Length: 441
Image (tube, rainbow, N blue to C red; front, side, top):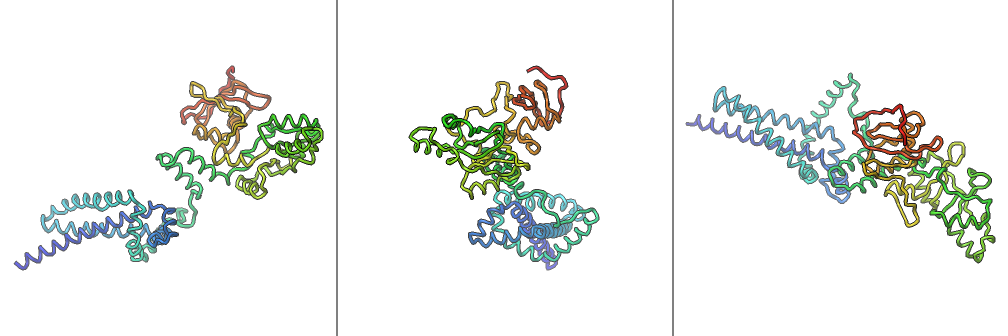
């Protein structure tokens, strides 16, 4: 009787140990999922607000390798332990067949109750679960710390002959790339609107773009000659949609000043409406020249510090290549800023067949934003520049190219400049090719 009682007691003890090990395994699985999926930005905000658990979560995330190692070690130890105890119980009850029963039963128990269920609960509320589990996880990391460091050392030693240096290389993605990827993912899931995605992306890209990427090219600049009568100058300023106009003398590339429409109107009012009494040199502002390679971030800071919105862009030889304004930079963040004086023609017209008629001077970034395309803008700034770069030649009118999943037909050309194209989206798998025989416009 006493012997039967002791056997039953040992079985019940082993059963209790099995349940306890399953709970421990569920704890390790949920902790690993919650802490790796927790929002670091949210944890940092909570830490600054004085949340101690959030501070502990951030501390654990800063030692991510040791954290994951401790969770894996703990999980494997308890899973092996629970399998051993369950096998002992079922062998005691069913004999040698208990091994088969133990394999089937424990596989289901571990997969369902120690892996899938706790990880599902943790991933549904990772921040809350991370805060709740942070303290016991810190105890587990401290307990398995020495063993984790030893295993890390062995793993590094094994991987070193293959040229892999764990912990020595930086992440492949920069912080801006990770942020851009997170925003793109949230947009894909519907949490972030397209306009918000474009604004955040534009803000991130400011440091990677130069004034050359957003400037108004000199061929499209509206300038005023200082050699003409003041009455003509007044008429040109009034006819222009812009408030600031570059002034040139002798030849168009010789920019000698910038005329602000308000200064001209004040001078005209002071002269009683007589334009001949206005001294153009007295009201003109000194031109401000900036290099082509200035980043948009630096140019934005310069605009703010100088309290001006207009600069002329020059190349390494000092030749004027275009102009850039504060509005051009802000449009990289918020999109096109239009007012009642802006021209209606945007350079992009949608056709009934789904194709687009695009002016060659349209920036690639603007077209990508408007259509949600992904045409590359690393080697060229405008659509015409992209076609010339891909074709490796200046194409003729009517010639057709297919690359980057789109069909480009050259519709108009002025000398060596492509002035208009028809772009038709195709399947992304199509490769670059050029039709040898130009097609008629």
